[in-house]
Image (cartoon, rainbow, N blue to C red; front, side, top):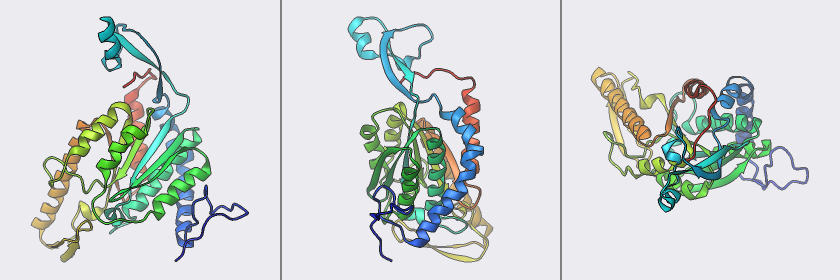
Length: 330
């Protein structure tokens, strides 16, 4: 099915900022996401978003002498070393926040056995986050990454911009091979020049973690550096089959990253338990990696209510923050 260039004289709803029009089936899918997320934006997420994130954005104001009660991480070590007296960087709250969505579009994200594909769930979660942010006059940007870094869109808050984010996620070309998460995280260190809320939406299936499959764990160090400056929330998309092996007999499974074939017998309780144990080990190792990097973490199952974990996260984080307080700089 061909693509049309979005340069109509009428500037219809299917054209977004000069981006190409989508095939009708995909456009219908994008509109469905918009409709499904609208109610949540106006109800469950709106209050949670405000209490969780408002006041998190800060920008530099001045360097001043250290006062009892100042956070150690706010110390300006260069000025302190030069003067021999402790000085801290003072920040003030920004009236608007910048959110940035890093969305995995590698081949494993197109996997589904029950419910949505992981990429569909990521698109809906991205729409939820983006629309509620735009409602509060905050800006949202997007970076896609598959086997190679993909499209990057700077932050915006207009409805047309938010719709384009959703469309780009849905229409991104799938690339075989492991995701380029490490490369994309590293790029954000220079791309995001001001403090931002960074949501990483991925299944994290191709990254190496302690106690699990091999592979480089450099991404954890990069995530840790990113978390020192930005507020990072990792959203892991999970298909039911990845955690629960059905008791349906012999299954032939093909690993999407490299085509490796494996057969498992779901009739055997021992194989089902081994499958679940492997998933728990992987999940625990990822959780430990996120904690080391000081990044928040949300698990989202694609066969359930994908919005519920996000709402619970907002509420839990708002409770943890307690009364409104000032934030120090990183």
